[in-house]
Length: 78
Image (cartoon, rainbow, N blue to C red; front, side, top):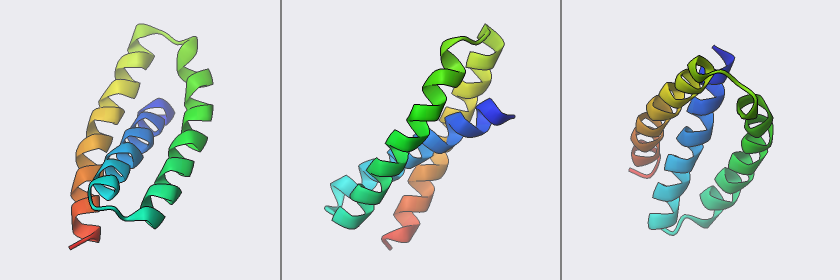
């Protein structure tokens, strides 16, 4: 579950950040960019030495994080 969540949160933030960039929302970009790098610093050590099952769980979390991040960022800037 931890791997699913870390995959989710990283891509969630990337999607939000991409939307903020497209809307030129600078404060959002700064905050999201920092958070992406901070989360990534933990993720890289977790996934680097993992099983295929762990990598699949992480990737499914990332996929759901992408959709959720897009949904949230659209609604933040409405």
